[in-house]
Length: 102
Length: 171
Image (cartoon, rainbow over all chains, first blue to last red; front, top):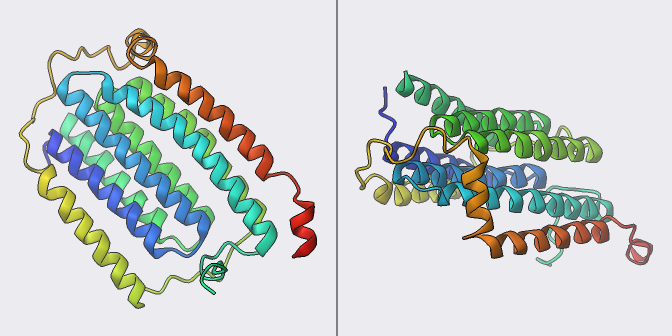
């Protein structure tokens, strides 16, 4: 049983962030990469809420408010870009989206 | 009790996060992401941030994951997505992730704040008034900027999802 101190919360948040980071590097499907990015964002909000709780202020929670707003806007724009890309190239695999490489 | 719940939610969240990353099927990955968000919301409740847990479920699990599922079904990119765990890039990704984890944990495990701050009342995370007070005094400018950002994002999405006749004609 692990004690739920600030260190534990920050370590858990780091672990989630790293899992998301690994997904961004590992996966080839643009949609799953985008989902992993969202996972990294959620991990950072967990760290902010933990800091806020253990320091007795509300600032971290307000930051999480802003992060949620930003994430909603980011997902809308990102998915619109992916759909536009799919319309032009007929694929969402990053292996085949290499127009800038050649 | 609190420690048990924390352990349960932490384990659940990490397992679902791994499931999101390694799942071959994009729909299953989205479902794992949904469960991961539920776990994070449970951790928020443990941290007395009830309002944020509710908002996370509402905005992320309700809107963002639903949007992801819509797009996955719209694009219909199922099957033929094998993940090879032997290639060079996979090893490099694992190495980079491990280094990042060690780097963060090297300073994440230094502090000693074991008990939550007693000044933070148990009802603060659930009440709207303190949030609203902060948002409309200290963070008034960011709120305005955020409204403008949402407007810009909305316009951007409209422009992006328009039919691009000129571009599609040439391709």
